[in-house]
Image (tube, rainbow, N blue to C red; front, side, top):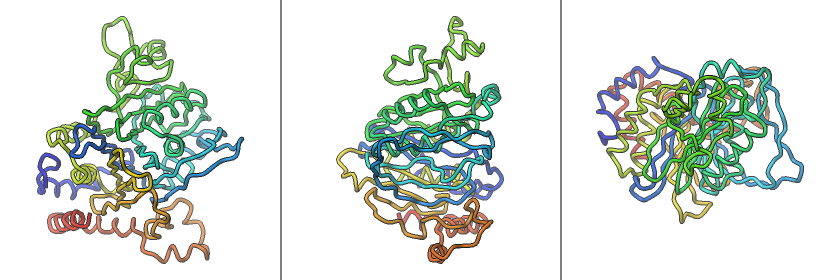
Amino acid sequence: MNNDIARPITAQLIVLGLVFAAIDAEASYAIYVGKNLTVDGSVLIGGSGDEVSSHWLEVVPARDHDSGTTVTVGVDGAANMPGRFIEIPQASRTHRYLTMNYSEYEGFPPPLTNGGLNEHNVAARDVWSPSRDELIAMTPDPQTGPNYSDLSRIVMQRATSAREAVEILGKLIDEYGYSTYGGNSHMFADPDEGWVFINYAGGRRLWIAERLGPDDIRMSYPGYIHEVPLDYRQHPDFMGSENFVDFAVAQGWFDPQAGVPFVASSVYGNNPPRYPRDEIEQELRRAAPIDLRRMLDVVRDVRISKDSTGYGQVASLRHGVRPELRTLWIAPTASVTAPFVPYRIGVQHVRPEYGKHRYLTKGEATRFVTRDWQIREATEFAGRTFKRLLYFACDHPGIFYPEVREALTAFE
């Protein structure tokens, strides 16, 4: 075990033993390592989503769509922050991608996704990023516009680069608004660079994005962007809504004459760093160059992978790989006790054990299993299997977890 990446095993076991003491649905994370800081020159991106519902792997084929086709986006009155669905135009062609879907978060309509990997080697993660209380209070009722999952899915369907992902989402929010649960962020990456994208509550169509370059390391936990240049719309490393600074000035939250920088995380956010965000960023930088094995270990770190974690994902993005062989490493539940399995974009079928099951799936408690679904339910659901392993390991972490971790690492 590399001590620059993880704490000594005794400290890790203490954390694992307390894994249920600090369960928080707002605990998703994303990690980016630039290509100058990796062993093989690839960009590394990984992380997880924290949602209580079931999760299942899906390979979504590329599709052509007739002119005039639309897609329903947003939230309805059942969401924790209610809204109204709207229709927006669908692209004429959508890309092939791998994703982990789930069925419940803050009352949003299923199926939900945080991103994944598409055939153009664009990877996406989604991480909570709380907006300041005043923005949450401003949010219209009902709100309209695509929600975080809609945006994540649209990036997988339409983007051919991380920069294009930001451009696509920015244009959508500018035109249609954004349906929020209180503030959110995305992390996008391709073989050359990454971007962090923050979309704020309030119904004012506020968004900002920052480029992550080849020498950058970033952990979104929660998602954050600090200092933003006032000429951000002309800056090559930033993009944002036209009103991003002006709205803060109008609200009295920022004074451009005061001689202080515009710090987005302070002006618009309510998201102080959560342990171990800074620690992991520093550990990764000290340990550079980073390889895929170490990135898998970081996403598995017991300080962040826990009972509320829905799955784990890691992508190593580099040029020269055939589209069908581009790979997303996926753990079916919290990777602290679940193996990462490499799935290629070209895979034609997902094993039924990793597919959708009734366990913890929204709405399944109100109906019986249908005949065509019985054979799926007859298989052993991977998410449930490795969740049980987590509970066993947490019962006696000092005895069980070293063996579990060693076995997972050897398997991978």
